[in-house]
Length: 172
Image 1 (cartoon, rainbow, N blue to C red):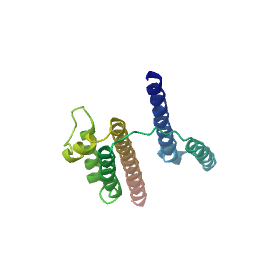
Image 2: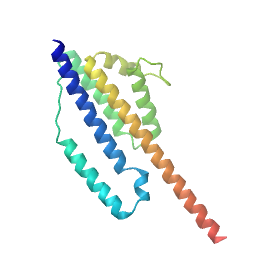
Image 3: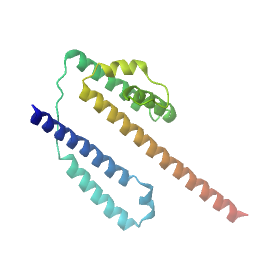
Image 4: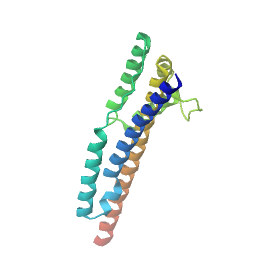
């Protein structure tokens, strides 16, 4: 029994490691620092990142979760709720972030910084424990990616305003 659980835990850790690696490679490819290196270096870095991404994607690790019908239904419902927010992300970034944070608050035992989506919390409670952990990790990843996107947008806006100010100074 212990070895089986240890085996499942190890495989689950490998699933998480794959997700982390893919996110890191993606973040490097979309990093603002890529703008500050030469075209040749950027091309070489992108080729390497694409190769690593491809190699990482060839690794298939899957830990199946045994669910009853109610747990399966809860998982589908929770996934649908998250997907609906993700699909509306580009329409209203700030609202989507707040909604994702309220979903995340429903998944954590810590005192959340904002409101908790009670409906989502009751849906997640109906999921298998392994699925609850995966849902929480997915929300963490989405929120982290949103945070990184906001930083990139802020940097781009700052760069644009700096260029405008520089152009306006030269015209004076």
